[in-house]
Amino acid sequence: MIDFLQGKVIELAEEGVVLSVNGIGFRLSVPNRTVATLSVGEEAKLYTQLLLSEDEFSLYGFATPEEREMFATLLSVPQVGPRLAFKLVAALPPAELVSAIRRGDLSALDAVKGIGRRTAQRVLLELSERVQKWAPKEAPPPSEKEKIVLQALTSKALGFKMEEARRALELARKECPDASVEELLRRALSILAGS
Image (cartoon, rainbow, N blue to C red; front, side, top):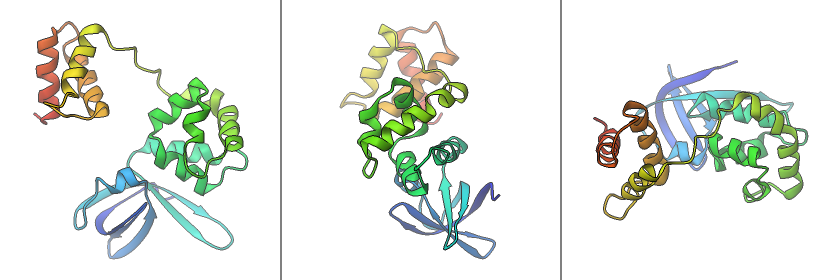
């Protein structure tokens, strides 16, 4: 199996990219959120899944090994083929998908275009046990001071997205577990600024 490809981005398309690796152009199906982070002419590394069928070879690329693992796991669900598995991974990052499966949230899966209610139920049924084994436990709910920091980071004044604010807060909390609101906010801003 091809574990990953690393090379120069030659072309970007919706849910796709052409990557030049040692003079060979590989066309990969890639989730839109990953395509949005890439630029033509820049170097990129994508974790891959090659699927072979009677009439075609399909190469899928993912930003993280976790996305690829979720894609492969979804392929093990009866009547979920590569297109549906890709749609689910493209629509929901692994943490959100795992969370939805754990909660039994049918509407989160059902909301993905092309995924019907029956397929969503099948995914929940088939994966609920397996997801428990390999997915990390959900983070504890934020404390009052962490809620204040999140509110500040996602306010109009600072304007960070909730997902990036949560990641920065998590890192700040690990570095300074007993920090005050001001210290947590200062550290999270520092992390978001890349310093």
